[in-house]
Image (cartoon, rainbow over all chains, first blue to last red; front, top):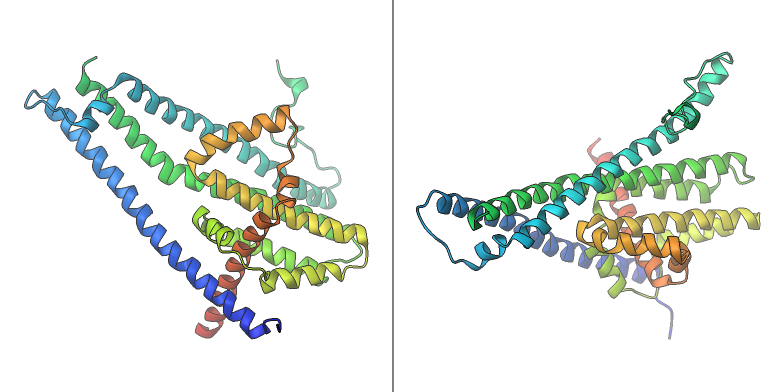
Length: 134
Length: 193
């Protein structure tokens, strides 16, 4: 059997990309729906809890019971707190990597213009040198 | 503590988690990925400066262009698209990948050819890692496993990816897709100008 021509291959690639874009579109709609459905549910349960606290009503809703479970509540709080910690540490690492990447070239260029250029003597990542730490 | 208070506490934590996942985490992963690609591109630049092939080599130009496109279209590298290319993979490699392979093969030195292939693999692995870590849930599940297996068992995931061509192939298709988008947008920009 003859191998597919270049035009056939290009056409197959275009078709594949088109199908990928269609899948992307569907997934994007589902994701957006879930994103805003979550906000609606959060608002609903916030409202219900305030209503119950005000003593206007009592609820035996399944979602209300799940969110009212102390273990579930603590679990959500731990994930939120842990996520924040990972995010903070990640941002710090990112900033240090960025300092390391950008300052190396800049320092080299500055040294060419001014061989007597002085330095802060911080580490390459912009942190306090170990020998200066108390 | 009575139930409505616990529900209110859960709801506040969920609202915070919602903002964190849909805004902060997403942007942080993209920033982190871009920083990684900038670093790879800088290393490629320094390597090319000391190499025999130099900055005018088609292999260097293509690889750098690939990295630039990856930086620009990082937000489009999603798990669903990756899975699509993994499930519906074809036997033919995209023409951009084929052209890059040809350009690397044209480099005279064997050591430099291998190094360029390595840069390409590092980039593909960075994209794969980004796709997985982009989802906060997947990050929570996979990051401890990856970290522990690297620390205790010395697992080399980049090497593992090299041994699974279907994974690298799907990532290459994502890259090619982004290259196609970049070319189309450039053509449209020229048309408008």
